[in-house]
Amino acid sequence: MPQIPTTLHELTVGQLAARSGAAVSALHFYEAKGLISSRRTAGNQRRFERDTLRRVAFIRAAQRVGIPLATIREALARLPEERTPTAEDWAELSEAWRGELDERIKRLERLRDRLDGCIGCGCLSLETCALSNPDDRFGGRGCGSLLS
Image (tube, rainbow, N blue to C red):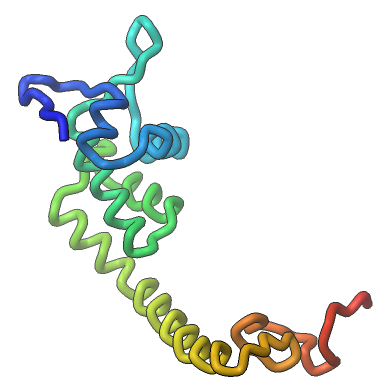
């Protein structure tokens, strides 16, 4: 990993990508979604404040646990002056996400438990399989698509 001089206060998108481990395209996407920001040079090149590294780390950590980008953006917007999240901020935000994560874990456990049965029978029947069609309101009327 390339070293970034500690006296350097702004990073190019390439430097930010190299240091954060995020792809340049991901950084452009984060910026388009309002998660990070940059200034433009006279040559229209992006320059990111050095503390954007921590913000990208925060975004990626939240993504790894399944938090949607819209939720991450809302959380970052609640920070005063759009500052970089601190350890205390992360603790507060992650506590707020705990219920959502617990529910996601329950759904994944149910999926895992049902998946064992589907692998065993291989049916994937739209009529009876809760895995391939879990919310089928019309399953009682028969299998296949209903036109009316």
